[in-house]
Image (tube, rainbow, N blue to C red; front, side, top):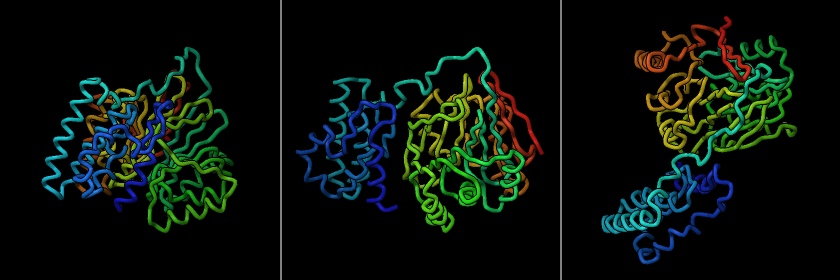
Length: 386
C-alpha cells in the first residue's frame, strides 16, 4: 500500500475509542513535536519518519504523550534508515524523550496498553434471559453465522458465493425475512460472497464494514449493490464502537489498524455480551493481529465462546488462547483431509491446544455440520445439526 495511503488511514485512528474526553487532535498538533524543532533539518529527509508518527504503531492511544513517544520511536527508526547520521541523532532524541516522560510519570508511557475501563460494566444477572442463539452454518471454507435474539437477526459474514445453496436453505428453514444487522468482517470472498445476494433478496437494515478496501470484482459489486439500496444504513466499523442487538451489547474490539499487510488481520473482531456470557467473533484475524489484541486488551479478551479465526489457520496462537480460555469454540472449515499436510498440522495443533490446555470443547463444521450455540445469559450450551 502506498505510504500516503497508509498515512491517511492512520490519521483517522489517532483518537482512542476508550477515552471519549481525549481531544481529536491531529498529529501535527502533538506537544511532543515541539521537541523536534532543534532537529527539524535532520528529520526533513526523509519525511516518512513523521508519516509513521501515528496510531499505526500505538493503537491504544489512551494517553497522548505515551502514544506519541511510542509512535515517534517507530516512525523515526523507519524514517531515518536511509541516512546514517540522522539515525544516530534520532536515537539520541528518542532516549531524551523517553527519559523526560519517565521522569514526569514513570507509568504514563505504557499505561495505554490496556483499556482504562472494563469492556462491559453491566450488572451480573441471576435470572435467565430470553434465549439468544448463534448458528455457525456449514458453508465449507468460509463464514456464515446467524445470531438471533428477541425477534432480531444478525448475520456475521456471508460465505463464498459457491455456498449459496446452504445460505438460502438456512434462511428458508429459519423463516428469516429480515436481517437487522449484517457484519462483514473483511472483504475476502469467503466472507462477502453472498452479501449482494442477501441485500437483493432479504430486507436488511444496517451493514457494518471495515474501512479496508479490496480490488476484486466481487467487492466492487458489493459496493455498487450498497449504493443501489439507499434504504440500507452502512456504517464503518471502528474499534470501541458498540451497538445493542436483541438485548445483547455488541462491542467492536477491532480492527486496531487498517494497514496491516495481510487483509485478514484487518478483520472486525466483536465481543457480544449477553447477561453473564461473553461470545468472541474474530473473523480471519491471524497471529499478527492477535498479538496486538493481547497487548491492548489483555485479560479482557476472556470469553465463554470463541469463533476460531481464519478457519483455524495461523490463528488462535498460544498467547491469544491463554487470554481467551473459552469453554466452547467453533470453526467453519472444509473437510480436514482436503487441506495440505502443513495446514492440517496447524489446525490439529490449534484444536489440541484448546482442548488440552483449557478444556475447551471444539466443534468443527466439517465434522459436526451446523453448530448451534444457545444461551440464556446464565449458561451456554452447544448442539450440532447435520
